[in-house]
Length: 155
Image 1: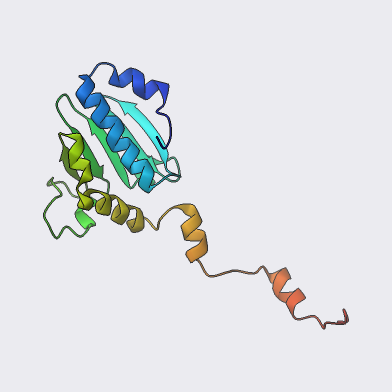
Image 2: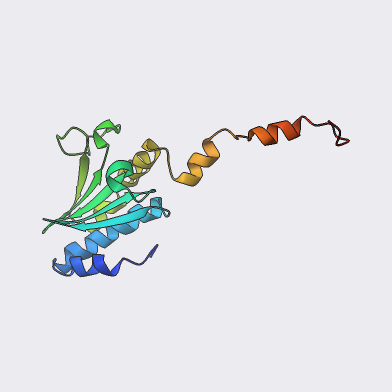
């Protein structure tokens, strides 16, 4: 297991059929395998939801979410309408959010499911470490000035 589930999440899932609870945890696990540094934000309203981001701001910076319903789990993508969907796997008609409905754990083995998670991560620029390594190296003004000094230490 990538990361143990939060006690709060487990308590929320206790109200669901064990099949659906286990399915939720399996979808969560798959997302965390693709994004081990992701921060989970758990909420409970009409359904239990787990938002994933790298900043702790799932609405603003989230890349995907897992929503538990009574008989299935949705793997949602915050900007799914903007993701390439060549096989038509994404469902939904909203302005931005799209999802894949998961009813059985073996459905997570379909390779395209992980590809959508990976694409959603790339869409937001990847995890912070990746963004840092992709950015051009920056030197402070002080570093630039010291780089122009003579090797003998003179001015």
